[in-house]
Length: 153
Image 1 (cartoon, rainbow, N blue to C red):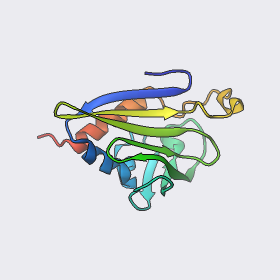
Image 2 (spheres, rainbow, N blue to C red; image 1 turned 120 degrees about the horizontal axis):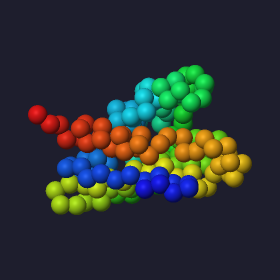
Image 3 (cartoon, one colour; image 1 turned 180 degrees about the horizontal axis):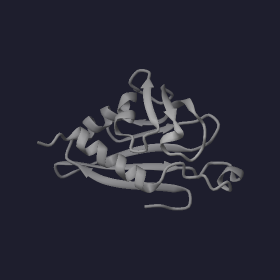
């Protein structure tokens, strides 16, 4: 689902919510499932509460939209609800967040991934560069998460 200031995509993954939540708490997990190809590596400890941080080492060349070269992105956890909701702010310069909401369903979990830039200053909204990644990229990341969390033979 896309709106003018938020993208949300969902997928049922046949794994318990706590397993998926733990995966997202590990900075290396974000790199492992990134479908954009711009997350190169991550450093830092697993997050356990609001305010925890880690660093993602980035390269926008994979997306080929802005020539930023190699750079680091400081990630700060803004919402932490164990096994239910994790949200992070990937920038100190721009007000936007990514998040993942987990809802148990049947034998698995509905995983909803989102990007919300509604709190961004209007001058930045007017640039037309938001959202930074597409709905298709978020959806593909959930596909990679599924195949990573639920190994298939």
